[in-house]
Image 1: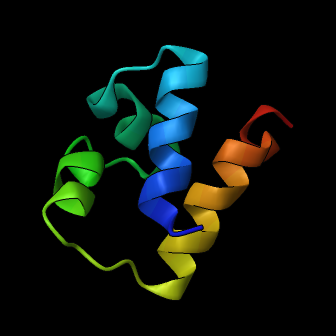
Image 2 (image 1 turned 45 degrees about the horizontal axis):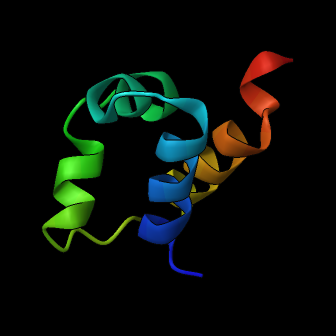
Length: 59
């Protein structure tokens, strides 16, 4: 699944606003909006987003 699909599912399942998600995951409140507009993530940023969604941010 593409990263945007994973992010969209996370937002729905956790009831998180898109700007809050971006801030918490990578410090960028525009992240989700930019992804929706076609932004491609660098590998390191994608890894940070995926780690955040996997719960690594809670360690």
